[in-house]
Image (tube, rainbow, N blue to C red; front, side, top):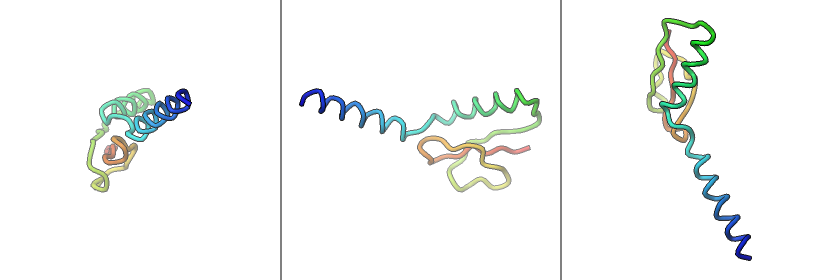
Length: 73
């Protein structure tokens, strides 16, 4: 019974960590590395609140979906 309670506790902690999502700066760096590897230049990536991506394309979400990463050329 103790093992079952321990397993459920560990799984619930892992679930909340997964739901939190990636930190925005980490995801932004990963996206920039992929764009640089493809030879893309003259772009900007901005971290904005969800729903405020005027004038750009949303290329990622972070912090549990609260923020978006916007690509602008």
